[in-house]
Image (cartoon, rainbow, N blue to C red; front, side, top):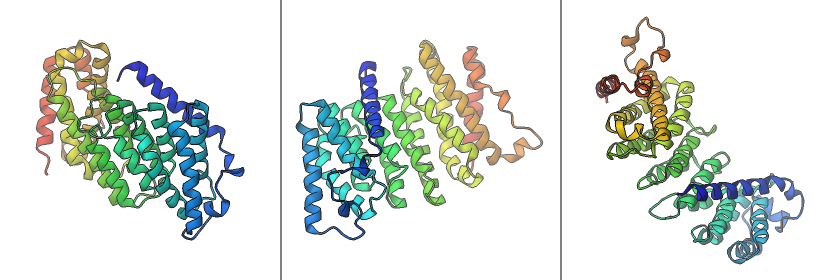
Length: 360
């Protein structure tokens, strides 16, 4: 996606966030929905459902058809406000999210970028699986052809995981859908956002250990598929920029992760890291010819080496008996930066052999 379009999307999303901040106290005023509906602890009756549907339909029509940009923004704010009301009950949120998904899904999947972004922002605050499912569909390039919308949708899903009201299995499912949505994804920012979304799901505080471990495995699988795809090409690949950022975050997560959790993900992650390192051999000349990509490749190799050493110390503790952590003795990045191809290739081969010997 061209840089001007990316900047445009960023500006739109920033405007949406600022607009929400400005209305943080709006629920204290009339939201257009009867407070009895928002605070209901029992299933809504037919009259309440009808009133709720009419409210959502009216605002959705403004987003869908108004030629006044301010009116579109105000409609989006109107939809978000009751969803963010601290007094809103789970009963209300579920009914509201279903109504939002029904009215806003066609707009989110439509061709008008600004209208789609406003619809997606409102869906993010639906905070249940019904509304987030629409956003997850919009992250998939086989469904959504607009890279800007895929980037926005993935970012909103990642943000929504913080306060999403869903069962633990849903977080695993959503992470797998983000992983699958990376297949055929050419935009590196979209890939980065999807990887960030998977990591966000794994970091959810209330998530039981088993669910978090499964999501971390999904994250490793996503990285493994990305590494293999990049390796398959002969040209320098901009997608290494998404790996660059994602691996730094993963490195920080891995350092504070319980040993048992690291062990659970290591079997999938270590081969992926070795594949990323091999990319340096395959793309040695092509990647180094581009200063920006060369820096990204170097950062990836540095993170891979750190992560591989963390994993290896637990996989082969006997090899490190009596030694100190050797983070200062890194090989890959210095070899890359000094153009020492022979040294880089030797270290890449060494790690490939170590990882291949791990017990499956």
